[in-house]
Length: 328
Ligand code: PMV
Image (tube, rainbow, N blue to C red):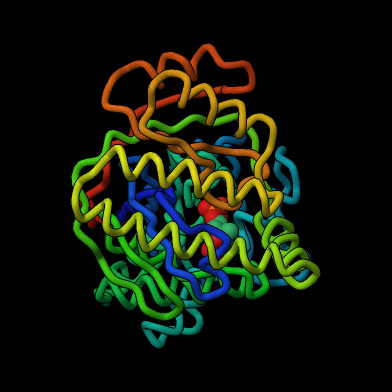
């Protein structure tokens, strides 16, 4: 078996606006998806998943019509998860020149699904790395990132930036602006995550911002204003100025609210973090539900979040220096 892991991420700045060419700064965190892969001789794909914030499931199919899974979890979640794994394996077949190859795939993840922490990107990145290596091909991180992006782009009907997949593949803090993706220097940030136990529908939220932007000039201006916050954020990050970073994260959250992608639970957690003395706090990812990210070197924010109605889990998340890791 060949085993790889890849980290989830938080957006320090720039989600949604990145879809329209503004820069974004995501940062990889030490919450990982691990994907184990073993080649099969019959060309089929069998996927076993655990801990995906839903019941574990096993799916066996060969791409034929009647080969659908019989499992005890919501069909749309299985379909979504399978879409990503399928797409990743298609990339592997293409990269290795083995169009008929099949695999047993085992997925374990401690990144909540669809909650703004890049769970799908981490699974796709780890799957592409493990399955190509299983066939004796080792891809550069940049190529893994690119192939993982293409997978997300297809599964999400073209509603994907390169931010999640690049960040998960290379680790650390990164800057993404259109096609231009690069690693940037970042101090060890005191990241605290609050999770409301829910998930947002990324496709619907991205489509909502697109519609708003077409209807109202203020929304187009808001997207540009987020870009301005991101550029200031980059300077604060380079200077290691946590106070300024937090202040800019607060502004970024306000602008995301103006684009109608926040939620009461997210706003409540953001305010709980600020009241607890965090440098700043904002939603992370598509919004609608899921996670917030705050900066606080003390225990206060994590403790406050644990007592906040609507917050299901709060945890400290170290910056992940490594992106995809080759474990076996
Ligand atoms: O919620 P996530 O982790 O899938 O992040 C979505 C980020 C968006 O900017 C809204 C979309 C994208 O692909 O960049």
